[in-house]
Image (cartoon, rainbow, N blue to C red; front, side, top):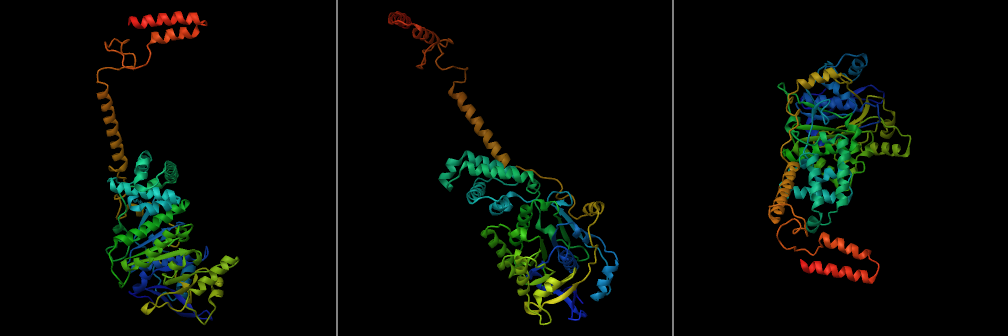
Length: 507
């Protein structure tokens, strides 16, 4: 049974389906990352909930995304239901105690939790380009935009800041092309249109201040339990690219802000990335390389990353190799790709001579999984067919009223609820534009003498007393020339020209 150094996951079974032993995750290897996979409805969310409970009780803060709303039940005490009690007996969980956990609800849209915000500058050009699905040329313009913002001291906090900067870049396209390479107005326009789409999808709620403080994800309670930060992601999943980009940003922020700590007795934070395939779908190589780098190095910061997805093929091989703790629920094998996924999953485990791993994956019941955790010296344990223990918290979602009560009592209530809109690129560029317009108007007034309105070529008519300086004809000359054009004979033209000449000399 688990102690202060491990998390009890469930009990493995012998070939005759009798109890074999307790399966545990050693806390000192909790930062070696992990993977939870399986088809829909096979029990992945319960496995995630069980691990989150274990880490919280050990004093490790947890961050996880709640895709369907089911994970919110971790905030309230569980109830003794027949099938849960039966499972507790099967895995020899005695006593089976119910408890609630310290949960902080978050929501990028601020509807089902505290708002989460990040600034455009924090997101950076690479993630912004990924979020907007920009072409290579457009990504180049985005990099130039961030470079100009740095050089000219323009704060990029929210979407309107980036929109104002791009408009300024379009006006200065010729000047900037000479300094940074080709900056075309069509590329800038395409980025602006994409920003409008992003804004209509609700991304404007995410960008701005106050930005999320990493320290608020690493809280512990007075009794020593780690806070469980639950991101409401049901609405967020309508924009999967925003969801994946946000979670990658969060991992990057953790990597950049946290100090090196080496191997600890337990992690400082555990990060569960549900629907992990969204992070890698259609991602450019530079982004996949970035994920692989973060996953490889962030463990030295004391952070464990656990990917949750349906298919192990969703995870690139270089990233998959970093995931030491594995929970594999049932997979279906109807199509060639599904059969390949089963073989891939089976090959990643240390074999068990008691059963064929590939066959077992297709025969697992709901709530049952193949489990392999890191043992002493970080060596993967032999894979075991395991019944996952029942959670101590509520199984299933909480009600809206229960959620509102928990949010109201949260330790971060009031810190993120109101948007702060301080002076940034939008206001600074507006100010520069106004100053330039005022300077131009003043220069025009000085050039005109500042006395009165003038019409070129009409100074004498208006009685200025000055000789006409332009070559433009007077109204009288224009009228006489019109008469000349109307006279048909050469004699008539000569007479009129004579009259016109005498008038001109008389002046």
